[in-house]
Each structure stands twice: as C-alpha cells, then as structure tokens.
Length: 170
Image (tube, rainbow, N blue to C red; front, side):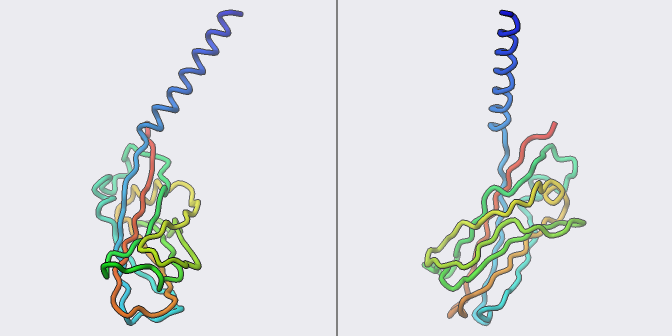
C-alpha cells in the first residue's frame, strides 16, 4: 500500500514537471505587415492589402519538417506608424487572414466597430485551430481587410503585428 502511494506521488510529480518544462520551451515568433491607407480610399468600403512574410520564413524557411507543432495565433495588434501622432479614429473595422502556398485563408484576428482615438489597438483573436500547415509552408501571406469610417486627410501607414506560439515537436 505504501509503495503504491509513493509510486503515485512520483508519477504525479513527473507529469507536472513535464508540463512545466513544456510551457517553458514554448516558442513565440512574430510577423509584421505594413498597410498603406491612401487618402483616396473611400469610406464604408472594405479594402484589402496583402503582404508576404519574410521574418516568419527566416524562422522555418518553408520547412515542413520544422520541429514545432500546435502553432496558434497568440496576439494581434494594429498600430499607426505614420503620420506621427496619428490615431485609429478613421478605422471602422479590421480583419486579418493568413494563408500560404496550397492552404486556404484563415481568419486569425479581427475587430469591428472600432471607437478609439488611440494609436494602437489589440485585435480579437479568432480560434482557427492549429496553423502548423500554414506557417511551415513557404510563402506565408497575410491579407488585411479594413474599412474606414471616413476618408483620411493624409496617407496613413498601419502596422499589423501578429505573434504565433508553438511547442517543440518530438
């Protein structure tokens, strides 16, 4: 009886410590995209901007054998890069999609009814499941769809910052 109790306690300690080690080695890797909002963009009309990842590809190089798994979106943020002191008051909504060669688009983050005059805003994350296939494939593409409340008086440069998280694969 005493041995069973000690064995159960030892197994429990090992399981808990493995989970702790796994969370410590969890990877987070960034992707940023720039979106130019020109003065000619009409209000109340969805506009799309696409960019191809370069920094994510340096992490994995389109390597389907990369030793990661369970890739998910962990954070998404939009911010005004220029004009200096600019804010998001003209932006009505934003949707961010990811895809890569051979994969369909997945909506990873969005925000509707934006009512802030701040220069940055966290986006709502969409539960898209695992993004392993998208991130490990070559040519990761981010498409940003935005809608303005009103036309801007000058060009505005927005930055979309995405963070992906993963765990090591065995």
